[in-house]
Structure formats: C-alpha cells, structure tokens
Length: 239
Picture 1 (cartoon, rainbow, N blue to C red):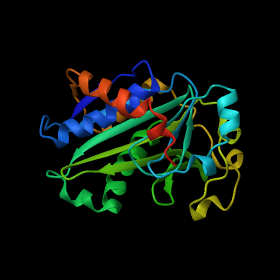
Picture 2 (picture 1 turned 90 degrees about the horizontal axis):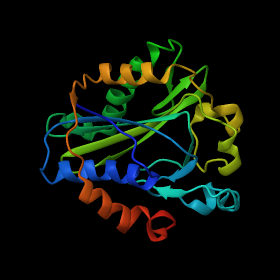
Picture 3 (picture 1 turned 90 degrees about the vertical axis):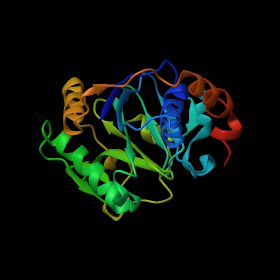
C-alpha cells in the first residue's frame, strides 16, 4: 500500500485531493491502494454528501467567525474539525477486495484496523454503533465512505487534541444518532484521545502496511475540482 502524509494549504484542496485519488483510480490511472493522513490546520465544517446545512449548522455563528463550510463526496453527518483533529483515508480496490462491496464488511475491515492502530496507544478504545470509535462510551472517531465501480474511498477523523467546545458552537444536535448516544449533547458525547500524534500516524501506517511513498499528486485534477466544486456554494451549500 502507498502512504501519503501530506496536508495541502487549503481545506478545499485537501477534500479535492481525496476526490481526485478516487477518480484517478477509477479511470484506471492507478492500481495501488493508498493510505493518506492529514491534519486540520484551522477550524472548518464539512457537510456529508446529503447533509442539509440549515438543519445541521449554526450558519450565523460560522459566518460570524469566518469558519469555512465545505461538502465532501461521502455520506454521513456534518463534522467540525480544528487543530488537534487527525484525518485518515484509505483507497481500497474492490477488484482485489470484492467483499467490501458489502458495507458492513467495509466498516469491519477498516474500523477493525483503525481500532487496532489506536489501541496500541490507548488500549481502552472500542467500536460502537455502526462504525464509531469510542473511548469510555464517548466518540473519538467518525467516518464515511464513497463506493465507485472498482474502488472504495473510506475516510474519517480521530479527535486527539482538538478544542471540543467548537462542536456545539457550530453544530446542532444531529438529525440521526446511534442508539448508544442516548440523546446526549455534543459536550457529553465526544472526547479526545490525547495521544502522541506522531506515534498515532506511525501506528496507522504500520497497521495498513503502507510502506511505499505516494508519487506525484494529480495536481491538475485537484485544481479543477477546487475550481468547479469545492470553492463553489452550488456544491458546498446545495441543500
């Protein structure tokens, strides 16, 4: 598996990069699976593909504070990210791993590996709900995925040293929640891992056996996606 440890300058570029990795693989221009990790360098909000911003975001608070709002290509609920939040993504071949077309199997494989990686530093972590990573019944990691014909993009967040007060500041209570949440507020539901970020990235690389560095980025496609999608309200605020 290839390893890509790179945070691009803008949020739009970082979202476009994973979109580009999936598109590039799907059109047959790459046959290697990829693990990518990157870090939030500022506060921002990312909507799920079908999320409705007017239901999930305090838009006035976000605009007042100048917090960017973008939309990803995968499903799931809206998230707030800020420094101290680590992102990971795995690009997996559905030709090599056809069983991952069943989403339960995709969650089982990916989150099983994520749990094992994190548990080396924080042994108490477990899985709850469909695919949440939790510590003492409080969420420390969420995820979402995008399935194409031959490739799967599975990406998520790990809360590590983030200012968690930002979550209730900008997000409403989610329209859907796992049973184990039990109606708890954001403040009662999430917490940080508080582990060494360098060691956490190393564990992710080891557990995925990502031994080879990713080569040249698809820069032209990233720029095209930023210009046509991730910088446009027609995409980011379409619902």
